[in-house]
Image 1 (spheres, rainbow, N blue to C red):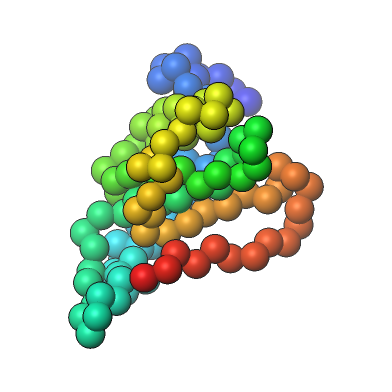
Image 2 (cartoon, rainbow, N blue to C red; image 1 turned 30 degrees about the vertical axis):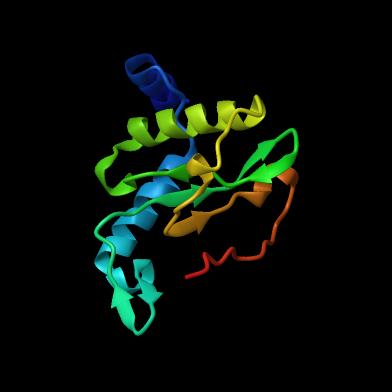
Length: 124
């Protein structure tokens, strides 16, 4: 709580677990670029960016907006982007563009009391 309040006071956004999960995912994907790659025809395309899709609740159900360039963001930048996208989802103002192009997906079923989940695979 002490650090959470200090973080919010300094950055104007709440600190949650998702920023740590996204940043850790980005670092791992940069360490093992094949996991962040895509097959395009007969070629493997290695991406030099990490765009993480994050499942968030909306009035219509779960939507999966994309936090772009996670590798370049700090925790505050990630939390700010997540808050903005979640607000748009809650207000039914999120666009298809904001939900397209993720290279990796993180979900948090725990908000619904889930202890298990199904992986989300981004199609090539």
